[in-house]
Each structure stands twice: as C-alpha cells, then as structure tokens.
Length: 111
Image 1 (cartoon, rainbow, N blue to C red):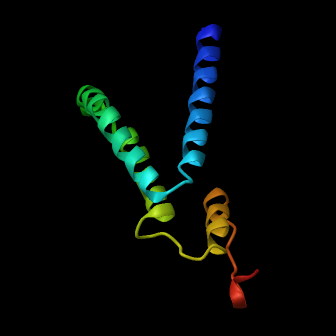
Image 2 (image 1 turned 180 degrees about the horizontal axis):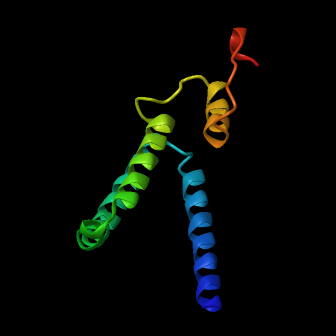
C-alpha cells in the first residue's frame, strides 16, 4: 500500500509539472484552457458516467446533501451567486469557515 501511494503521488507530481510546462509554453491562453477542458471532458466523461450509473442509485440522503452543499459552494465561487468584488471573496471564505464572523466592508471596499 505504501509503495502504491508513493507511486500515485509521484505520478500526480509529474502530471502536474507537465501541465504547468504545457500551460507556460501556450502562454496560458484561453484557447489552451478551452481545448484542454474539452479533451478532459471527452477522456473522463465516459468513465464518470459508467461509475455513476452503478453507484448513484444506492446513495443515501446524506450523500445527496453533501452534493447539494458542494453545488452551493461552487455557485458562490463561480456561478450566478459569485461575489464580484475581490475584497469580499476572502471575507466570504471566513464567514463559511466561522459562521459567527460577520464581514464588514467599509467605504472603498476596505475593512
């Protein structure tokens, strides 16, 4: 088990470094991101659908609740509920981590 974990970590590091080199050579262009997103979709969607077809019907209400909470967090970060101000995003993260903390944004977006 230890060898398998070490191999997986090393392969992940190699893939991550390769990705960074490829992105740097492409200058981080939007076309590069779009192309790689489509390639990943085509490569991994069949496997994801196959595994989901087998696993999802047996999920409990707790697992569906975790999916719903994750979806809300994604919408807060990237979707229609995202906060456009760069000053407010770290404060939103603090509120999520510590619900008792109330963010205060003064004039000019500063605390």
